[in-house]
Image (tube, rainbow, N blue to C red):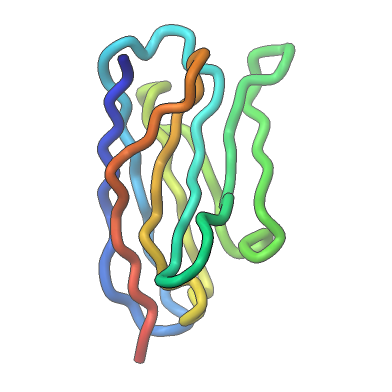
Length: 118
């Protein structure tokens, strides 16, 4: 089992920045990818970003089209921690952000709310 805890959500004005964090615990050995989805009210869950290990054990990152160039996913000092730096935030980025970790099975966090409003 893998447990995921997100933090860093909150209220921010358009154009501002937030940094989300996700810490995994439990059976973290063998986690090969972590990332984020988000879900806005009345909408389907949308993939945001993924960080994974490539064949050389370097980190590989990919982003959804709506956040590419504004969001950056990175690993923390502990390998089982990931961050999502969100810049140039827009009202349409308002959503609950969910962290996930892949280890034979996809594990999910409880989510953290991000509100972008003036």
